[in-house]
Length: 108
Image (tube, rainbow, N blue to C red; front, side, top):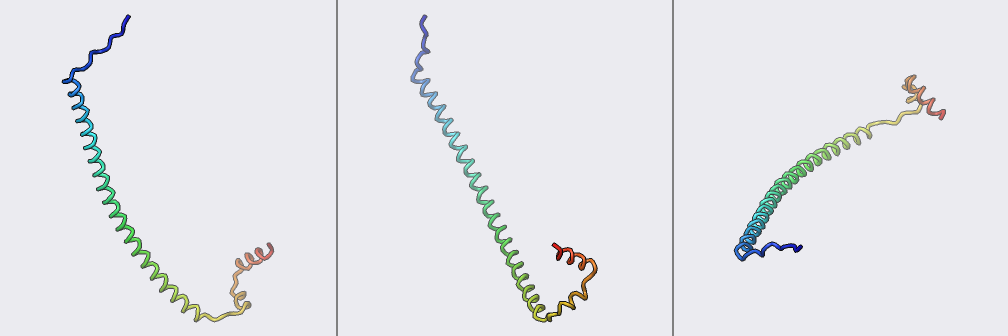
């Protein structure tokens, strides 16, 4: 028993097959280029949005810093106005609940 080989393709058939492969390769390349262009456009759009978001966040943080600095200046001024009081004075304003808590803490 002998296994027969298929006949060799003629020149016409092999060039036709080659053309099909070439067209498939061209289509694959075109699709790849299209998808890359879409991805580049997407990345550009997102990076612009990200930069804008970061700028907005930075501006908000700068405002918060200015507000905190102003508040700290006010607090510093209030601290300068405060006068020290004696320990007896502080204990005089102590409520029963705080007294019990303090005493319990001192036991530990």
